[in-house]
Amino acid sequence: MLEHRFAQLTAACTFLLLIIGGTVNPTGSSLACPEPTMICNGEFLPEMTGGVLYEHGHRLAAMSVGLLQIGLTILLLRRRRGMGAVAWGTLGMVCLQGGLGAVTVAYKLPWFVSTGHLLLGFSYFATLLWIAWRTRPARPAEDDAADAHRAELGDGRRLIQLGVGVVFVQLLLGALVRHSEATLACIGMPDCHAGDYFPASWVQRIHMIHRGFGIVVGVTTIALALLVMRRARSWGRLRAVMLAAIATVVAQIVLGIYVVLTFRSVPVAVAHFAGAATLWGLWAYAWFSTGARARAAGAGADPQLLAPVRGVHAVP
Image 1 (tube, rainbow, N blue to C red):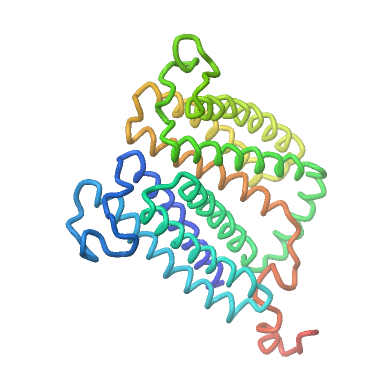
Image 2 (image 1 turned 180 degrees about the horizontal axis):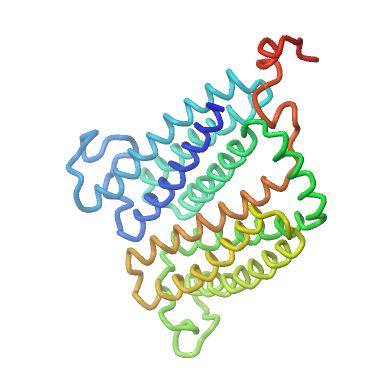
């Protein structure tokens, strides 16, 4: 139970970290702290004003998530004997993420490193959602109901898998737009400029590809969510997630348009980034929560830890 709550806390803080990180680029604060360490302008706690507030605030938030991950790793190793690989794996992801952040600053924002840094952050967030789901306490009645829901869903999980994949591609495109400084490469709407929908410039092309694929994501999300809801008529939680995905993707399209129309207003740009993180989290959670979960090892605490309490010996 403790590791489940801790995983939830770490996932929630990671979501906030993603949003905080999403403020750094739109505010032009990526190099406000020139040192690729936890020191900013020669201090660990500099005056938190201007770009330093966003950049160093992001670093401090990342350090906090790193400490939470260390705690989560220890809990999983001590209390979930079958989750050692993911315990070490997520700790490794955090360490790699910190390293990519340092390289990003040290080499003055290379787009491919910054893009990898962003995608790894989203991947880590999804992994935490899986851990939170995997470590839920055992609830036999709910697990039996979930088995019935999965039978009702049938091959609908393939639709969810498609939704996850489509959103991830859009995250990649969005990261390329952000870190190639292509956000305002096209200021026309719906065209790029003067009736041109696919200009010669690579920067403008990646911008327009991101726009076009955003429509694909919108149509795909709505269609897939409706199909999943049609199959999962009695699965209230999954239907709520799908409804939230529809609402989020519609809001994302509107926010994407306003990012251009407002010439990348910081609140709008950050809201658009938060919407991307939310949509990704919803599809990832839908994928995890519709998967079969082993009753003995996944539904609650490790059976070997429960054996002394039950007065029986765990079967090896």
